[in-house]
Image (tube, rainbow, N blue to C red; front, side, top):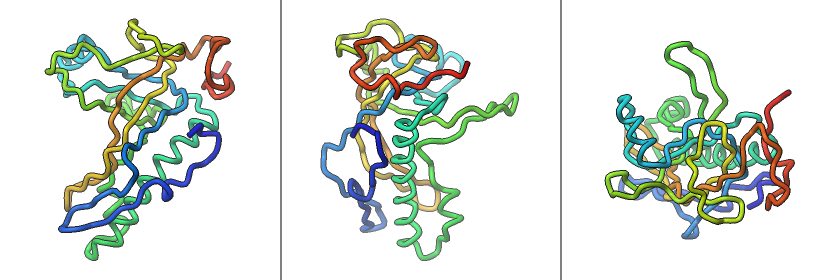
Length: 216
């Protein structure tokens, strides 16, 4: 998927309920690569995770966010796909739980993209999706795989404000009855694409117009 247009998520995933559990029906493996996004809180190395843990932040796996900061059409299409997947699951839960109405179900939904707000200042930040790997930091792996634009190992730490693409593998829905539900994606790799204040390199393998840029 190149994200140059909207993708019909119903063509990719359907849901069923059996024995009180919700299952996703999709062709495995179901892997997507995102368009370029600005990241704000990457934790892709052991040192970054340990710094977060020292601050009391519960981080057990390598992860990074992809934000809608300065988003263009391709980022909007990617987000729409994830939003539609959430809505599809929401509709399934409402239709299969006779005691639950749409408002209750929406309150229980854990959306993939959501707005961040500072607890201290109340400041609101662009919507973001947090992408988590299945690699426990305790396994001794020093970092999640990160490559450059030529798909060679990128050994410099990803930093706040970098532009990245993420590779995600769909793991299906989760449903904790009377508590919460949502869709699960596994972060499997990251590609460094540049800094948001810099023009994209000329050898960029995607259309430079897709890259988010900060307003002047």
